[in-house]
Length: 395
Ligand SMILES: NC(=O)c1ccc[n+]([C@@H]2O[C@H](COP(=O)([O-])OP(=O)(O)OC[C@H]3O[C@@H](n4cnc5c(N)ncnc54)[C@H](OP(=O)(O)O)[C@@H]3O)[C@@H](O)[C@H]2O)c1
Image (cartoon, rainbow, N blue to C red; front, side, top):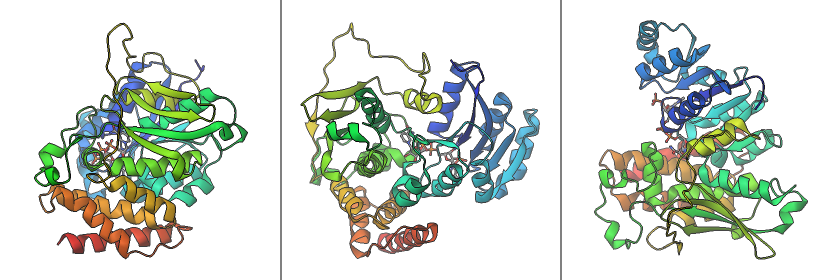
């Protein structure tokens, strides 16, 4: 164990990833110290309680209108951190002096913070996959080797398999030549086994009921459409520099194997643990050390049945579409993601049927001519165009 506690900034502290990160910290006394927290501004009571409990030096809320309520809640909890407001305040918090920034913000909004943290030289534990996917070349250009650590369970698993495989396997070095393919597992979501015709009557309540993971609403719907898996294929390509033709998706409903790496000699290394995000979060916060007791291990004394099946691309065309936009590159992934965010919101509000989500994303992607994503402005312009077009189609 390191002698000094590692200082952590948690962006999106009130969400599923953020609250689990704070649990990891609380479970490992003396190992981590939370120095600053940021959230959207929708749950100021929770944010104030968190700030008081961890003695945060600063808190930020993206919604500046939430500041008076936050001040009141902080006073009620006896906490007096510095308060930063607005998206600029959140981005400033991403550069706060610390050892690791955890980005647990949902959606494309997380891009500014990802770029700010990397530019400031912080190690970035990245749950906000959207920022890597939409800002691929920008994020990769800024990230020094080892500066970006994946939090997504599949990518944490792939990283662990590659680290276990020896020097250079992670990072596109000489060891990477021995990698034949990455195998990303998918639970299949709540509608695994249904045909496309059987997906017509899916309601938001049904889509929000994930069989193995308890997550925020957007990623839960993305898991039901398998858009999340599509995003993860692009994420794996960007993180590990492996071509799309060497990234496989396999459905594994028990969510115990979080992904695998197959090598050229026919060997496969898999990472197994019960579904619990505290494990990949702890690994990203504590890397290269593991955090003892971060999560439970598999009980190898009990009988288990773990199954694997191919993906049904007809019922769930989102992964093939993600491969297509990933291969196009440039602004295409940003358009896929932005159109999806609009459609998920519309679906959750009852304004779009379940199948309409990916159908609409497909139309928006087809209408877009991908350009370079070499500046934030180019990415945000494509993101904004896709949001407008998706909203028109939804209407
Ligand atoms: N949940 C999981 O198990 C899981 C697993 C793998 C990857 N991920 C990824 O992790 C990210 C977070 O997912 P989640 O499930 O934790 O989402 P979530 O539960 O919806 O939480 C989102 C967090 O972001 C905050 N937020 C929203 N807008 C913000 C803004 N403009 N600036 C700063 N903070 C903002 C929210 O604050 P308020 O409370 O104020 O709204 C909340 O704290 C996503 O990219 C997701 O794909 C999640």
